[in-house]
Amino acid sequence: MHIRSFVIKLIMTTAVLWVVLGLFFGVDLSEILITSVVLTVVGFIGDEFILPRIGNVLAAIGDFVLAYAVIWLLGYNLYDEPIALGTAAFISALILGVGEMYFHRYMQMNIFEPEKSNPDEKTGYYQRTNLQTEFAEEADLDKMSGDVSDNKKDESKPHNMY
Image (tube, rainbow, N blue to C red; front, side):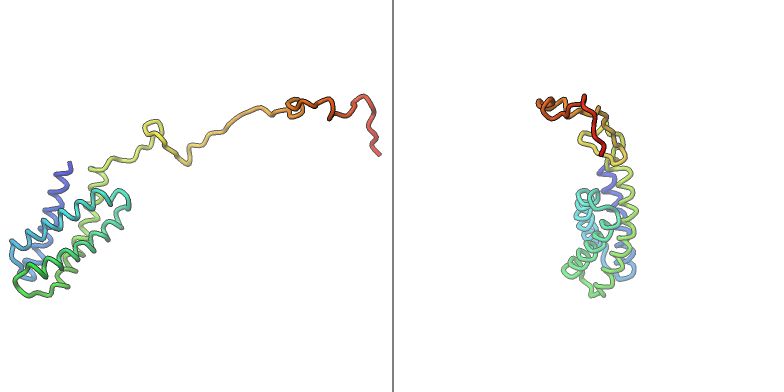
């Protein structure tokens, strides 16, 4: 399943970079493929470890920042033709960020193990709504103490109310 999700991410990244960088900015296909492979590998590793911990929206924001940085750095060092690299990286990262939100939803539904809702299936499980009440009888403290006869008043004498 992880290979399928990696291929989906690679195809999505390559398609977005080919449209934005290739068609609008004239970057060569070989440079687009190198950029998409690097971006996919780094992003997929982040998705595997970070996405389950921080959630979809924060992971998509992280992917936007990562895509912008990787495209800008690789473009600065790799692309032959001078292009408006900041604009190209921003547009590509923005489209990839939106696509990543759908990709993360796919990964959460199909790749990651769903959270178990049955407490018996998971050790150390705590659920706020699964509360139990403890029942016990009242303890008579006078009987439990050893000095019952010393502390008790003589009950045979009438009590003076005034």
